[in-house]
Length: 184
Image (tube, rainbow, N blue to C red; front, side, top):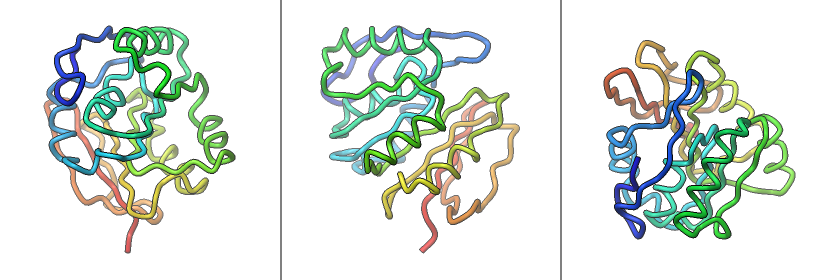
Protein backbone atom coordinates (compact mmCIF):
# COMPACT_ATOMS: atom_id res chain seq x y z
CA UNK A 1 0.00 0.00 0.00
CA UNK A 2 1.28 3.48 -0.85
CA UNK A 3 0.28 7.11 -0.45
CA UNK A 4 -1.09 8.20 -3.82
CA UNK A 5 -0.82 12.01 -3.78
CA UNK A 6 -0.03 15.06 -1.70
CA UNK A 7 2.91 15.94 0.53
CA UNK A 8 3.63 12.30 1.38
CA UNK A 9 3.13 10.91 -2.14
CA UNK A 10 4.90 7.64 -2.86
CA UNK A 11 5.58 6.69 0.76
CA UNK A 12 4.95 3.01 1.44
CA UNK A 13 2.63 1.90 4.24
CA UNK A 14 2.25 -1.38 6.08
CA UNK A 15 -1.12 -3.06 5.69
CA UNK A 16 -3.08 -5.69 7.51
CA UNK A 17 -5.32 -8.16 5.71
CA UNK A 18 -7.37 -10.71 7.64
CA UNK A 19 -10.90 -12.09 7.35
CA UNK A 20 -12.31 -9.05 9.17
CA UNK A 21 -9.79 -6.43 8.04
CA UNK A 22 -9.14 -5.58 4.40
CA UNK A 23 -7.43 -2.33 3.48
CA UNK A 24 -9.10 0.03 1.04
CA UNK A 25 -7.32 -0.60 -2.26
CA UNK A 26 -5.19 2.04 -3.96
CA UNK A 27 -7.75 2.11 -6.79
CA UNK A 28 -10.68 2.83 -4.47
CA UNK A 29 -8.69 5.42 -2.46
CA UNK A 30 -7.63 7.18 -5.65
CA UNK A 31 -11.25 7.26 -6.85
CA UNK A 32 -12.48 8.49 -3.47
CA UNK A 33 -10.07 11.40 -3.33
CA UNK A 34 -10.77 12.25 -6.96
CA UNK A 35 -14.45 12.58 -6.01
CA UNK A 36 -13.65 14.66 -2.90
CA UNK A 37 -11.18 16.92 -4.73
CA UNK A 38 -10.35 20.13 -2.87
CA UNK A 39 -12.91 19.43 -0.11
CA UNK A 40 -10.11 17.56 1.69
CA UNK A 41 -7.90 20.65 2.02
CA UNK A 42 -8.19 22.11 5.55
CA UNK A 43 -10.89 19.55 6.42
CA UNK A 44 -11.52 17.79 9.69
CA UNK A 45 -11.41 14.10 8.72
CA UNK A 46 -12.61 11.07 10.72
CA UNK A 47 -11.42 7.63 9.59
CA UNK A 48 -13.81 5.28 11.40
CA UNK A 49 -12.82 1.59 11.36
CA UNK A 50 -9.42 2.88 10.21
CA UNK A 51 -7.55 -0.41 9.94
CA UNK A 52 -3.97 0.38 8.94
CA UNK A 53 -4.95 4.02 8.28
CA UNK A 54 -4.54 4.28 4.51
CA UNK A 55 -7.57 6.52 3.93
CA UNK A 56 -6.90 8.93 6.81
CA UNK A 57 -3.20 9.12 5.97
CA UNK A 58 -4.10 9.90 2.35
CA UNK A 59 -6.39 12.68 3.62
CA UNK A 60 -3.55 14.10 5.73
CA UNK A 61 -1.17 13.93 2.77
CA UNK A 62 -3.71 15.84 0.66
CA UNK A 63 -4.10 18.66 3.16
CA UNK A 64 -6.64 17.66 5.81
CA UNK A 65 -5.82 19.77 8.88
CA UNK A 66 -7.24 17.43 11.52
CA UNK A 67 -7.30 13.63 11.12
CA UNK A 68 -8.69 11.22 13.71
CA UNK A 69 -8.38 7.43 13.37
CA UNK A 70 -10.67 5.01 15.22
CA UNK A 71 -10.37 1.23 15.36
CA UNK A 72 -11.23 -1.46 17.91
CA UNK A 73 -8.65 -4.00 16.73
CA UNK A 74 -5.35 -3.93 18.61
CA UNK A 75 -3.64 -5.46 15.56
CA UNK A 76 -4.93 -2.62 13.38
CA UNK A 77 -3.90 0.01 15.93
CA UNK A 78 -0.36 -1.39 16.08
CA UNK A 79 0.03 -1.25 12.28
CA UNK A 80 -1.64 2.18 12.13
CA UNK A 81 0.71 3.65 14.75
CA UNK A 82 3.69 2.08 12.99
CA UNK A 83 2.59 3.77 9.75
CA UNK A 84 2.11 7.15 11.44
CA UNK A 85 5.54 6.91 13.07
CA UNK A 86 7.16 5.80 9.80
CA UNK A 87 5.92 8.93 8.00
CA UNK A 88 6.45 11.12 11.07
CA UNK A 89 2.87 12.31 11.63
CA UNK A 90 2.01 10.44 14.84
CA UNK A 91 1.97 13.74 16.78
CA UNK A 92 -0.14 15.59 14.19
CA UNK A 93 -2.98 13.05 14.22
CA UNK A 94 -5.14 11.37 16.85
CA UNK A 95 -5.57 7.61 17.26
CA UNK A 96 -8.42 6.17 19.31
CA UNK A 97 -8.32 2.47 20.17
CA UNK A 98 -11.98 1.88 20.90
CA UNK A 99 -15.26 0.47 19.73
CA UNK A 100 -16.77 2.90 17.22
CA UNK A 101 -19.82 3.76 19.36
CA UNK A 102 -17.67 4.59 22.40
CA UNK A 103 -15.34 6.68 20.21
CA UNK A 104 -18.29 8.58 18.70
CA UNK A 105 -19.55 9.34 22.21
CA UNK A 106 -16.10 10.48 23.36
CA UNK A 107 -15.55 12.71 20.32
CA UNK A 108 -19.00 14.23 20.78
CA UNK A 109 -18.32 14.94 24.45
CA UNK A 110 -15.15 16.76 23.35
CA UNK A 111 -17.27 18.96 21.04
CA UNK A 112 -15.60 17.57 17.92
CA UNK A 113 -17.11 18.01 14.46
CA UNK A 114 -15.92 16.63 11.12
CA UNK A 115 -16.25 17.75 7.51
CA UNK A 116 -15.55 14.30 6.06
CA UNK A 117 -16.27 11.00 7.78
CA UNK A 118 -15.15 7.75 6.17
CA UNK A 119 -16.92 4.63 7.45
CA UNK A 120 -15.46 1.28 6.43
CA UNK A 121 -16.50 -1.46 8.87
CA UNK A 122 -15.96 -5.15 8.20
CA UNK A 123 -18.54 -5.85 5.48
CA UNK A 124 -20.15 -8.82 7.21
CA UNK A 125 -20.95 -6.80 10.32
CA UNK A 126 -23.57 -4.62 8.58
CA UNK A 127 -23.07 -1.68 10.95
CA UNK A 128 -22.24 1.16 8.56
CA UNK A 129 -25.71 2.72 8.68
CA UNK A 130 -25.89 2.26 12.45
CA UNK A 131 -22.56 4.11 12.76
CA UNK A 132 -23.86 6.90 10.49
CA UNK A 133 -26.95 7.20 12.69
CA UNK A 134 -24.85 7.52 15.85
CA UNK A 135 -22.67 10.14 14.14
CA UNK A 136 -25.75 12.22 13.35
CA UNK A 137 -27.29 11.67 16.78
CA UNK A 138 -24.09 12.91 18.44
CA UNK A 139 -23.72 15.80 15.95
CA UNK A 140 -20.23 14.86 14.72
CA UNK A 141 -20.96 15.74 11.08
CA UNK A 142 -20.57 19.39 10.10
CA UNK A 143 -23.66 20.95 8.51
CA UNK A 144 -22.16 20.76 5.02
CA UNK A 145 -20.18 17.59 5.77
CA UNK A 146 -19.97 14.32 3.87
CA UNK A 147 -20.22 10.73 5.08
CA UNK A 148 -18.62 8.13 2.83
CA UNK A 149 -19.46 4.47 3.36
CA UNK A 150 -17.31 1.80 1.75
CA UNK A 151 -19.29 -1.42 1.37
CA UNK A 152 -19.62 -4.66 -0.55
CA UNK A 153 -21.03 -3.96 -4.01
CA UNK A 154 -23.72 -6.59 -3.38
CA UNK A 155 -25.12 -4.50 -0.53
CA UNK A 156 -27.72 -1.94 -1.59
CA UNK A 157 -27.39 1.29 0.37
CA UNK A 158 -30.57 3.36 0.82
CA UNK A 159 -31.11 6.62 -1.05
CA UNK A 160 -31.95 8.27 2.27
CA UNK A 161 -31.37 7.33 5.88
CA UNK A 162 -32.58 9.71 8.56
CA UNK A 163 -31.56 13.21 7.46
CA UNK A 164 -28.89 11.88 5.10
CA UNK A 165 -29.35 11.70 1.34
CA UNK A 166 -27.11 9.71 -0.97
CA UNK A 167 -25.71 12.01 -3.66
CA UNK A 168 -23.25 9.64 -5.30
CA UNK A 169 -22.46 5.95 -5.50
CA UNK A 170 -19.53 4.39 -7.35
CA UNK A 171 -18.71 0.72 -7.84
CA UNK A 172 -15.15 -0.62 -8.06
CA UNK A 173 -15.30 -4.39 -8.53
CA UNK A 174 -16.48 -5.94 -5.26
CA UNK A 175 -16.31 -2.58 -3.42
CA UNK A 176 -18.61 0.41 -3.61
CA UNK A 177 -18.52 3.91 -2.18
CA UNK A 178 -21.78 5.61 -1.17
CA UNK A 179 -21.54 9.32 -0.39
CA UNK A 180 -24.12 11.03 1.81
CA UNK A 181 -24.81 14.60 2.90
CA UNK A 182 -27.43 16.18 5.15
CA UNK A 183 -30.68 17.02 3.36
CA UNK A 184 -31.21 20.76 2.86
